[in-house]
Amino acid sequence: MKKIILTGDRPTGPLHLGHYFGSLRNRVALQHEYDQFVMLADVQALTDNAENPEKVRNNILQVALDYLAVGIDPKQTTIFIQSMIPEIAELTIFYLNLVTLARLERNPTVKDEIKNKGFDNNIPAGFLMYPVSQAADITIFNAHLVPVGHDQLPMIEQTVELARKFNRIYGEVFVEPEALVPEDVGRLVGIDGKAKMSKSLGNAIYLSDSPDELTKKVMSMYTDPNHLKVSDPGQVEGNVVFAYLDIFDQNKAEVAELKAQYQRGGLGDVVLKKRLNVLIQDFLAPIRARRESFAKDPDAVMQILKAGTAHARSVAAQTLCKVKKAMKIDYF
Image (cartoon, rainbow, N blue to C red; front, top):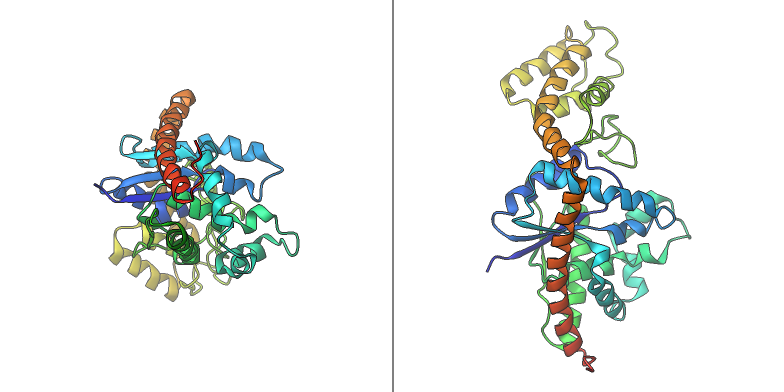
């Protein structure tokens, strides 16, 4: 039997190039080797969007379209909606008895996100507890591997702790998952050059951007603020255009020469941006075309999610039966 992988995204907006290079392209490759479950994590999205459920609901379809557009195949990958699997919520409740509040507050990933979101002392309980919910997501499917970046490793460590503690108290039920950190994983810097590409920061290039939207974003990319005239020597380090050319331009020798010319002076930002725009347009064109094709029949996309969710729930139900039997609460 193939090993199981669990991964997913919070449906709080359409996906962008950072998602593609950080996770989506790996999922396309992994689906051929593993039994892959991809979750639309709407319950987790609601932990900090509880007062805006329409935002989460509307983005279920948008994220699903992005999945299909990049090549995630529902015949090879189970795509499902988290909130439609009540077994996850039930397992979360059981896990909450096995973890302390102090342990949750020490989770480095959660601490960083609390700081980034500015919660201060008004932390929603659901947000603080979401590492427990995530542990339930992973273990309800007995996932062997969870693709994550280095910043998410504390979440997997906490999942292993909970699975191990459950197994020690009640008997062997769960697989202890391992983090799968791709060797080339990295965060694509935002077009403003200030931070990672992010939906919330408004500095992202989306997979669904129109050609005109894409051109506008590329032409507004951060370069070197001191490179005022074409003849001025320019800085390559921290220059977003060159960071993207390193990714999208396959002619590495020519890019190296462009960098040298830019540093000497005599090369304008507009020339570089036009070159980059062509490359990203060519890259996104087939993804955009597939997305538009799927978007013509949203009901068919929702049927894909319905079928995937039904399969995911059948797997989760089998696991929960084992959990309740181990906990001796299978009364009837």
